[in-house]
Image 1: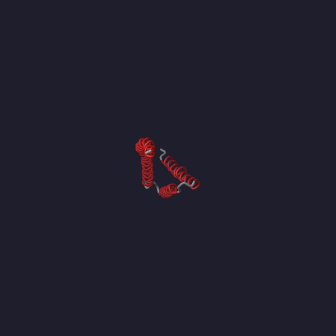
Image 2: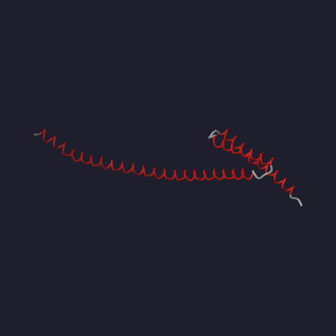
Length: 146
């Protein structure tokens, strides 16, 4: 009888503590689920903003590439109307410029190759093509005198 009463005196306080622990564990699981859900939602919002910015940058870059391609095509078509020595020279320069732009886009992240591609592209555009244009303008001014 003494053993039974000692057992009941120790077991009775343990049972409510055990039940409280189970309830607390279930609440902790619920809190953990809420925290995971909040973190997941935050990541989805961050991913949405990131993709939104990337899409706008991609669209802007595509627009610039299309504008440059149209400008090159228009310049090539206009070069067809020039006199012979200038026409061939400008057509060749435009072909070299297109090759330089393709090389520029293909170099990747190597800084030395990137710098060389930029110099080649700018050299063709700013020096040789504009020199040809300047020569044509001087030729037209000289032939249009009254």
